[in-house]
Amino acid sequence: MVRRCIYCGTENDLSKSDIIPDALTNGKIINPNVCRVDHNNKFSDMFEDEVISKLAFITNELDIKSSKGNQYARYAASVIVEGTEYTTKMNADTDLFNKKIMRSADGKSLIGPMDAIKKMKGIDYSKIIETDINQIEIEKRVSIDMGVFFDQKIHRLAAKIAFEWYCLNNNVANKLNAFESVIEFILTGEGTDPVTIIGSEDIYNLINQMSDLGSHSLFSYVAGDGSVNVLVSLFGIVIYNVRICDHIIQECPYNAMFLTINLDAGRIGFKFTSKNALEQELQNGFQPIGLFNGLQVMCPNNINDNSMTCKMIYSLSGVYNTNLPFNDEDTEELIAIIKKHLNKVLNISALTIRGLKRFVKEHKVNIEKGIVFNPYGTNMKAIFTFYLIFAIGIAENHIQSFKDLNEFVSKRFSGKEIAISEELCNMLQKEMMENEQYAGIIKKGAKIIEEMSFD
Image (cartoon, one colour):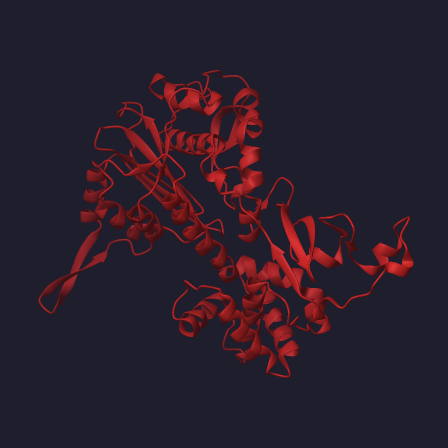
């Protein structure tokens, strides 16, 4: 069979399309049936680049680095130093004073490394003031435009992700008329918008049971009206429902599918023709091993199947043959739901091995020097992360792996879902600073983290 573009049907110059843009994920999934010029390269200019730019702070915090540039996304931030606001674009907190000069919002002040300031032309040296940044009040503010989650461009991106993933799993290698409506919206933004935002916490809870926070998840199902749909969960922050086509078509037999891509690029997934086929697989996938308190105990035939839990949750979900509650407008209630999940996801980035290794690498110079905490610092996430490093260093070799650290966190904070509040961080910073050896302990913990594996 001749392979053709799933958007236009041409067989010329087919390329590999990143179903989820490279800059938004650590794990690639590829659809090889998209023509290079008109329906791969142009998507960047049409909608992808703007969405990527507006989500830069999120991808940066989650330690997602584009493989094309091999660097973290830059995001806009305001830095308030002793009451004066400076604006900048940054890749990491350590950029603030080590590498760049920032100009105040009113244009009257500069702040940066002394050597760099003195090299500037036209500087009045009498007005240069040397300051110890560990003894001044510093606050960083980052704003996320919530409108990005409701904009047509992210709708087109969600539709593109859902459509290309659905075609990939059904081995579609040509343009099909049944997809005309969703294709038109992806390519032009015109016609009926097939994308709606999920406003039900039940659906968020369903997806979150099947994936880790910060993951991208895709979930296909057939709705009560017979239409074929794909749920697209971006980072677990917002979930879109994409109507792929009005009914099941012969060319696409697989309609009960799931995939989650974790922050570490690991993935769990499955595909079945229907929910009934999945349930039959589950029935055949267990064998009785004995009785316990009068109840038959069943064991999976394949204990290495890491998708078993997801299959069972999918089977028990009420998504199939129902009509999900949607919300097409950016109501206060829906914004509150998205903000809640956004805060959860941003908090967990301190609890990933990638995030910890990156933090240690970026702060290594200060750690090696013998870090001194700024008593006026307001970066709560940094304080919390330093506490994790401190805890590893003081644990006398009892925390040697990321699994050990997770167990410590669960016991210390009663679970992994932690609200990194000002009150908590003040308490943790006080606990560290009361130990006169805290700088050496952090240095020891940092070395252990450097040696931790990703397994």
